[in-house]
Image (tube, rainbow, N blue to C red; front, side, top):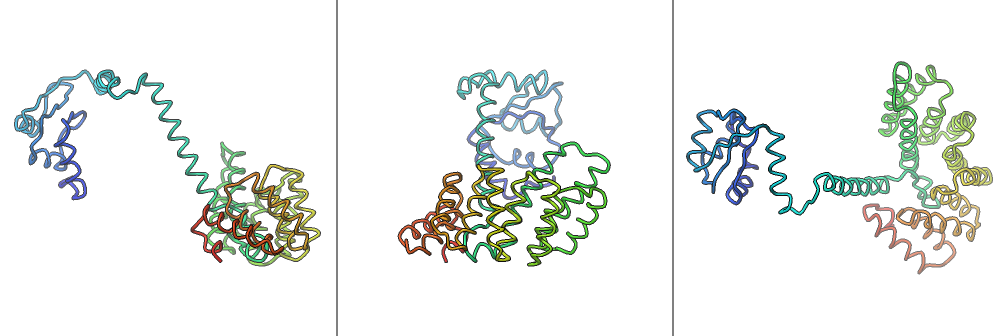
Length: 339
């Protein structure tokens, strides 16, 4: 409050020398902006006040800059008057309509940014073959984040025991993401004591055990989640991934089929099934599923990489190269796509 930060001085000097400042709601009680106004030459200045009274420092600035003290009715009133005066010049039309348009632009940009983030940190690292199936934590972490989102949607108002469960679940999810699996499991056990039929906690435990390469226990936990919520496609997809990692491809395929039966619009489930079909040597069917995944979500770099692996396996190298290039185009920060 005693001195204007160095990074602000030059930009403010340029702005204040180019435009005529209108001061609203600033009492000049610090030495930041006031110190600058004391030491530069302005084209003019208008200092607004409600009661027509300002301090001696402000009076000196107004006098030095040949400015004006302007009595106003209040902040809202002066902003309304300024809006009326400059609306036509700014070409904003009706104020409410302008806000709606601008808000939509910001919302669209926000959605675009969020979509980009979701894409970059997509949950399934399904890229067919050993590369993607060994990338366990990233793949299941995305599933976990989606699970958190669904859990949150169903509990928008939390009190008492429900609030405690959500707090523990959030902490457990963070610990899982950080790789602190023992702590995450302890938190999961606390949740189970409070809410023993919560499918999400079994799902989260299965992710933890999967990341620890303990596939038998992961399979046991995801089985409990499915028993608790038999219509959740994600749980079947997750169990299929675990079964795939164990080499139990027929069972993995059965779960992939079930996931698609429950949610045939999810590109990830087709890619998961395609990966298993690839490992079973059923390449034509694998390509069909991977084509479907890209059809449903053509902006996912991982699906192009996945299809490219199968195309390479069947000797269609030009097409495989094309898919690899597309994956890099969509996500050039992923080293695996260059390999």
